[in-house]
Picture 1: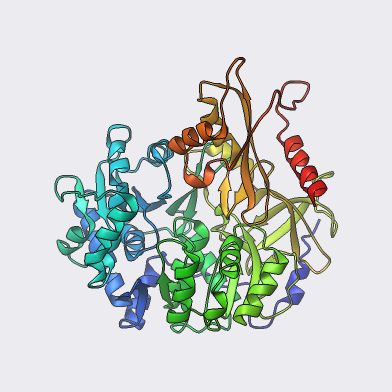
Picture 2: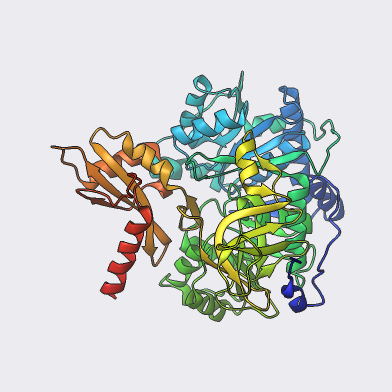
Length: 562
C-alpha cells in the first residue's frame, strides 16, 4: 500500500517538505557560530556571560585535556550535570575530542548510576561537587577512572561565586572539596592547563555515534539509544526549519528543560548552537526564578513540558511579571492540556503548540504548526524528511483515517540502534521504520493523535518511568510478597506513580517505611507518591498481574468522585 502523506498539503510555503541535511559532525556548528558570531553571547547563566568564541575555546580546551589523559576516538564520556555552562562545554568538548557523550541524570542514585556506567563502559565522568561522594564510589564497581569535578560557583560572576558555597552548605548541609590530582580533575583547573586545540578525527556522520541517550525499556533496564551525528544534526535542522520566523543570531532561548533529557538537548542546546541563539540557563526549575528570568532576559523561545507551564500559570504573582517577549513554545514529554495551552497563550501573547517524539528519534518526529493550521488535541504532523503511519491493530497494514493503531516513523533522525542490544534493536527497527509502541490515529488531514502511550510506561512530570524498575526495588524489601506499580491520573504531573503492595503473612508496614526504602534506591521522580496495601492483586489465569485492571479501577474511582 502506498504511504499516504496528506499532511504535506498543509505545509506552509516557508517549511520545506524535504531538506538537504548537511553531512557535518555536530561539533562543526559550534565552530561555525564561533567564527560567524564570535562576540555574541552564547550562554547567560545567573549573571555570567560566555561568548560563542569563549564557549568554543573552552570546549576545545576540554577536548585537549581529554585527549591528554588518554581518551580515544569512540570512547564514552558520561556527563552528570544540571543546565550550566560546564554541561555545554563538556558535551561539545567530548565531541571535539572524538568521544561519545553519555547523558547521565544528576538525580540518579548509586544503583542506577552503577548500571549506566557499566553498560556504557565509561572511563570518564563530569559531575557536580555535590555528587562527587556518590560518583567516587563507582570507581570500585565499574570501569570508571577519571572524575571531573565542578561546581555551580565555578561559572558564577563575582560576588555570587563567593556567596554560593554558603548557600549550598545551608541547603544541602555539606561542602564537598575534591583535590586536583591523579585521576580526579577539577574542571576549571583542567581548562586552565590546556590549549584550545584538539586532534581532529575523521567522522562518518551517518554511522558514528555522537550520543548515548539512556531510555527505559519494557524489560525495566535502561537502554542506550545510539544517536549518530546525522541523527542529531537532522533533528536540530528540522527544528530550525519548523520555527521559520526565528532569525539566526537573534533569538533568546530559555533553557529550563534539562540537557540530560534529549528534548532539552535538541530544542535548547543544539538548536541554540546551530543558529547562534543566546541560551538563558537555569540549573533547576523554580517558578519564581523562572518568571524573574523571563522578565529580565526576555527570551523569545521557550521549549517546555506541560508541568512547567502549569507551575508558572499557578504562581500567585504571575500577573506582576512581563512575559510578552515569549513568541514560540513547543511542548513535549507529556500530553498538553488544552486549558493550559489557551491560558499560557493569553498570558504571554505567544504561541504554544504540542509535539511528539521519543529518545529513539533524537527526539522530535511530529509537531503542530506554530503560525499555521493547528489542531487542538493533536500532536501535529510529521516534520520535514519524516514519514509516519499508523499500523492497524487488527490487520497490521496501514490503517484508515481515525483507525487506532501503532505509530511508526522513519527519517534521518531515527537512531542507529540500542547500544550492545541487537535483539532489542531488531524488535523496534524494521525495514527502516521505528516501531514506537505508542497507539494513536491519523485524521483525514494527516494530523496525528496519541491515544495511549507504551503499554506500561508512566509519564510523570515529563519523565519517562518504567514500572518494572521500581517493582524490582520494592521486591527487595523483606516484607513484600507481591508488588506492582502503575501510573494513575494526576492533574499536575499528568500521571503519578502508585505502588500496590501485598505484604508477607504476619507483616505490617506503612507508607513511610516504603517511602524511605524507595528513596534509598531510586531517583526522586521515580519514587511512588501513593501506596496501597492489598490482600491480593488481580491476575490472569497464568498468574500474570493485571496492571491495566488496577489503572482502570483508579480511573473509575476518579470518575465516581467527580
